[in-house]
Length: 297
Image 1 (tube, rainbow, N blue to C red):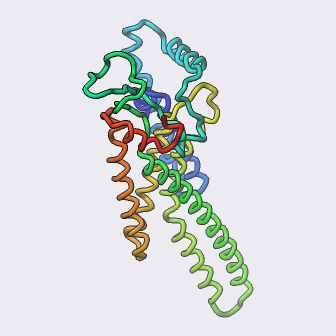
Image 2: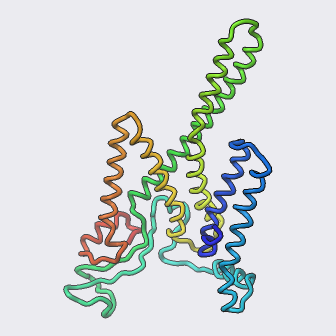
């Protein structure tokens, strides 16, 4: 984790997510607190990442002669002064990929060699290199995150209802001098509560890592770009995989067919937009077909 943050500060989102999940674990008592469980988070999520982060800087400090504080002060000031850019985008547009980044564009006519003269005004074909995601993967990933959020809300609602029912059943059991049906009902309710809660840690982890990497950008005042969202987009793909694993192992054939359909669209999207990721040459008509939104140009 320390090495990740050292390469790019964006990695701090994963660090924040791990601490948030540790806090949730403690609040919900998913594991009994012992001296070991209290100490280990500070070791694995505190001392070790910080030590790794500092060690990764040592070679650079030795080469440049700057102090660690001077370097971080310079980095902070640089990011504060970053100006406007034609391909900048706002954080709330990232889940929809409203404005990806065009890194390179060169229009070509006939057998015109690459890099000779300015871009052709009305080219027959062009080379374009874009920093964008597979639109199907990104959009399905955003929808999957929303579905997981709804799942979490529904599970919390059912957990609360079962807890209230369990509490009422215990009170009813005390008032009965004979018979054990209320007790059995209470035990069954308690089992349902735990059974419905088994999958919560997975869904909560996915959503928490997604939000921890995305929401901090709401506080950033400098120009931001779509690539700042990629760490969150990764969790969107994980959310798709999690949901599809449930569909493929479920009893409903319709869900399995939906899973195969999504996989087919993801593969088709990969092949369709691949030329924009590798800087391939495309006829202008084919390039324009890949600009699904006016802001993608």
